[in-house]
Each structure stands twice: as structure tokens, then as C-alpha cells.
Length: 432
Image 1 (cartoon, rainbow, N blue to C red):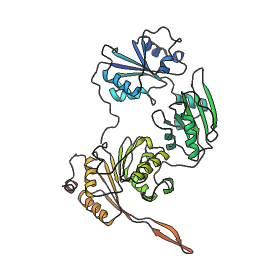
Image 2: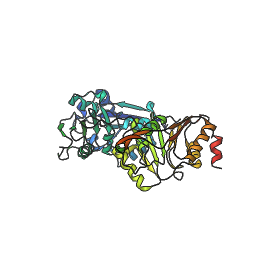
Image 3: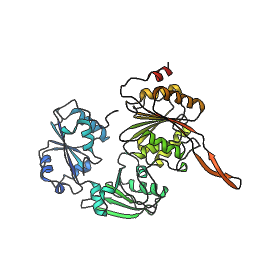
Image 4: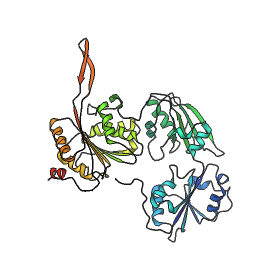
């Protein structure tokens, strides 16, 4: 199994990065250690808005103020790659960031690239802490999502009746987009508060219901607080089939719950969902742990579009990649920690998926047809794992009375890949 989040060592070991968080109150809100760092800086990088907070309020700084080029991510990557030791950069690179740089911020991005030993961070109070202080919310029990680099639909992954959610906004358009999404999802009665320029002299706070939100776009620096009123939505697998748009090609609720549990979502893992159909298994795998990513393989373009809509509806579209059919698209996909095969099963796909699976990874196959059930039964005999026959019956009308209607039985095989890294002989033979 890979080690998620491992730092990539830079080719320039001598440079150091100093990241200073600054609030909307600017220079007066900085502690003396952070001010001292900026006084000794030769170059300070940051967004134009952040650099402007140093104007006028601070003693004369000897540093050049360099705003990020667009896109900022590419400029930052370039800066990290050069390490700050060429003629254009000092050996110590100073970067100005908003609030707490380790909270959805540039500090965490730099540490992930060069390692914590080469980064010093001076955090200011985060916007989430300030928002909870203004609202009287317990930060420890408040869910926080970022729409800075993703679509506002990310909020739908957290909403449920009684929940309190903070949305870090991309710009002034985010509040209206969040209000529309909440209303469409049945959370229109939720109290929605937009907090702008928190901690600064231009701070403003406005509250309304999501369905009543018709305010004009305000400041680009804002955070949206949602006190949820609406249906209960669990993160546990097994949501009603009606929660998904589908054409009948869907792993039914009870079997889906057992399947997601068999896949054991945990941490920053990658799932392959082969023959994804409506995408319900991948979506509920993602909802179970918000650190995971999924790649769905679907042959039918209409189903692929439907899958994307389902992912957006459940707030996980930013963590789900939809690709074409297996086996054609498998080779270009990132290595999976877990694989689910629910459609299009054959010996070639089974062998390729097993070969791609990371050591200690989990493979789960649901077989419906007699032929595919025979295939997984033989693989279980060769490799072990767990083989189950799942049958579900549901009460349904029969004339003026009721009876039990059985669904098609499913044979489910789950198995962990050995850590030796050697391909299994039985599966290797299947593709020869």
C-alpha cells in the first residue's frame, strides 16, 4: 500500500520557506515574530490582496512584493522547484498567506512538496475560527468544506438536519450558488450566514434562509455558514435507490451497503469502480471517508453522464473521475488501493485489475450470472478470500395480499492482494 501524503524531496536542499499568515486586520494583527520575519525578507510572494494588507500599516519593508502569476498553482510549483537559490530569489523564500496557512492553505501545499523540516509557518487565526467565534458555534463539531478549488456542490456531502457547516468560498459568487444548491436539495429552510472580511475593519455579516437568499454579490473574501434544516442524510452506505438517477443499472441498497463495507474505505485511498453504472458504490465509498478518491469506468456515455450528475448531487464530484470502458482505460488510471467490479466482468478484466491493485489492496467482485459466479468461485478456490451468496427478499403486493419478492442472488468474492508484489499465477494465466 502506498503511503498517502508522502513529501516529495526537492532537488534544492538548502532553501527554506517561511509562510506568514495574515488576517484582514493586516499588519496590526501580526505577532512580533511574524513581523520580524517580514522585516528581514528580501522578497515576499503572495496574492495581490494579501500583499496590499502590508501597505501603509507596516514600517518600511525592504522586501520586493511579488504577486502570484495566474494560475497561482503553477507559479508556486515553479518557486518550489527552483528552491529560491538562483539570482532571482533569496535563499529564504517568504510567502504571505491568508489566516492559517496550514488550514486549506499554501503552507500545507509546500510542506507536502518539500517536507516539514524546510518550512516555517507563522499562522494567524483561521477564517473558520473567526466565523465560529462570531456565531457561537463549537468549532470541534462544525464540518468545514472548501469551495476554493472545487465547485460549491461540495457542501452537499456534509448537509444533514441539525448539522452546522462552514463553506470556504472561492469568491463573491459562492454564497448564491450554495443557497441555490441547498434549496434544490431540500435544505431551503436552513439559516445561511455570509461573513465577509472577518477580523478586519470592513467586516460584514448577513443572515437569511437559503431559499430566501436574494442578496447581491458582496465581497470576494467570505465564508458561508449553514445551520442545516432539512432531511437526515447519513454517510453510512445503503441509501435508498431513489436517491440516485438510474436506468435500472444500479447495485441495490442492501447489496450496496454490504459491498461498500467489504471494500473497507479508510483514509486517502483510491478506488476503481469497474462497470460503474449509476456510480452508487463509488459515491457511497467516497461519502464514507472524505479523504478518498475514486475512478469510475463506464462504457455507456449516457450512464457516464448520469453518474456525474449523481456524484454532484451527493457532493463528491470533485473526488470522482469518470473514464471510458475497461479494459481500454485501465492502464492510464492511477494505481488503486481497492477495486470493485460490478459490471462487465470477464477473465481479462479480472486479471488486469488484480495486477494493477496495490499490495494489501482489496478486490471485491459481485457476480450475477451463472458464468461469472463460476469464475469467482474458481478464483476463490485458487486464491482464498471470502465468498458469499447474498439473497434479499422484499415484501410486494400479490393480488389483494402480499408476498416476498426475491431479487437476483449475488455471489460476492472479496480478497486481499498479498504484499509480495508477485502476480498471482491463476490470474496471470487468464490473460495468456
